[in-house]
Amino acid sequence: MNTERMKKLVSLVKIHGLEAVALNPGPSLRYLTGLEFHLMERPTVLLVSASGMSAMILPGLEKAKLPGETTVFQAFTYGDDPAEWQAAFDRAAEKLGLTRGPLGVEAGRMRFLELVFLKNALPGIEFVDGGKVIDGLRRKKESGEIAKMRRAAQIAQSAILTTLKLLKEGMTEKQIANELVVQLLRAGSDDQLPFSPIVSLGQNTANPHAVPSDRAMHKGDLLLIDWGASFEGYFSDITRTFTFGEVEPELLKIGDIVLRANRAGRSAGKPGLPAGAVDRAARLVITEAGYGDFFIHRTGHGLGMEAHETPYIFDENKTILETGMTFTVEPGIYLPGRGGVRIEDDVVVTETGLESLTDLPRELLPLEKFMG
Image 1 (cartoon, helix red, strand yellow):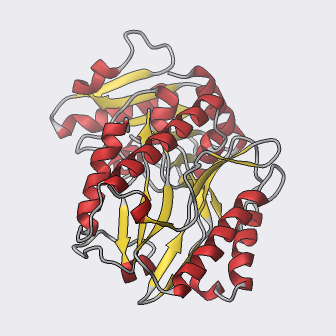
Image 2: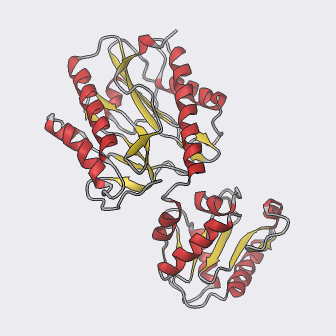
Image 3: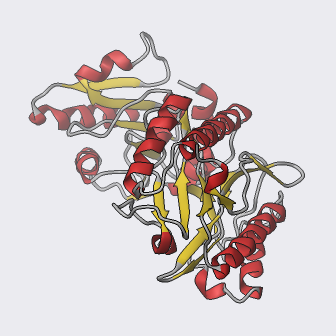
């Protein structure tokens, strides 16, 4: 249990006027406790109150994961009979003295299963989105967290370089993606990847979130790969676009524009500026080049223990950048039916600007340069 992080959470609970927060398995619970639980048919919930008291509700078979002696929270366990489960929630709520609310939950993670037990244990209490509390807890990364993200980027970059050496004409998107997963694990990634790699060829590169298919690689194709690694629970997220043989001139043109947009975005952020400033800087390059209608997503998203977290990098976002925030810069241009280019880097806000955690060459490079 990280007592300093727990103290910070309690402070944020008070600041936002909540009586408590409830967390089920996921990055935030792991961030606070260092304990790894997964969502399953048995509910697990950590309750933390504004008074500083906390309680963990969990199956009896999971109790062995807890420290031998914990003074930070009390465990309330239950057996295999679902008829017993509500009583564990009731005992935890009574121990913490929760009576008035509101009680915050992670809106994107709390399941109906846990919510029903909590509502039965706390009748009359209002449940609200506790996102601001969690954002305030995890948005600024500590030096140790940044070091893990840097290592995750190094692992991802090493894996792609090995994968590119193994490519051959005729390989499918699925085959390339599967090979990349193997190389990520061999390079040292945790087995829980941030996401399944996106590998797209030819006209499929015009779909930002394409799913790898049986489409085979042929001369004249663009190859877009969006992938990441995990190191001790922290993620990287990178995109590079390659050429195979001679591709049509306009695709090379948009590659150069996206490269300049990526550079503009990475140069635009610094402490005190709104997150939207990064989006505007990257988008302006693409708009002035005449391709604004083909940049169809935000410029980036926060990154850390989740592949997508705050801050989100879009024009209207007024969130002020602070040192320690980490996010992606990933402008793209997508020409329907023809092809697309995206170049994505991971950055951290420092006192002087944005430092890139990724340094793989960004321009459209010919695959022939890498293939064995």
